[in-house]
Length: 149
Image (cartoon, rainbow, N blue to C red; front, side, top):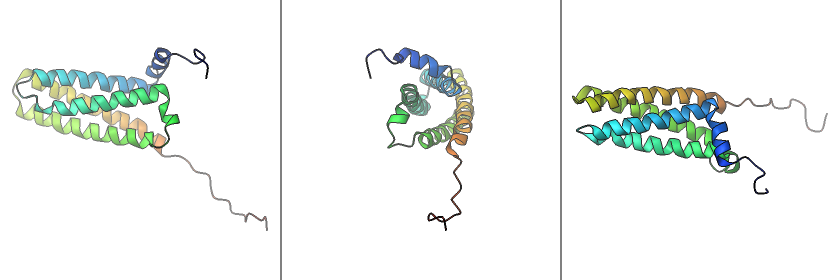
């Protein structure tokens, strides 16, 4: 491929961020950053690991999908990897946020817990969006013999 013949990285990022998947991934990253800041400002920042790991994974998938690496690197099934990432993120954010809301009495922890619940809902929505793409329709098996007899 010649230099300058394809869209730039910034152009690819803009195009991907205008899609539904791009908007959801950007929202996930933003909520993870906000939850991380709130948990960091809390008296007990022990639950910030969930936000850190899910933010890193969301950034990796944003880069992979933006640059089209999911079409080039076929060793990994990116659809299932993204689905598992969203399921785990949804469950971890909801569980950790409920624990933080119930146990912590400081405002930063409570705000982080509320936005963590919102992040869990966004991860669940991403899971809902990802699942139908995993169910591929298949062609029916031929009923005639290959010899045509």
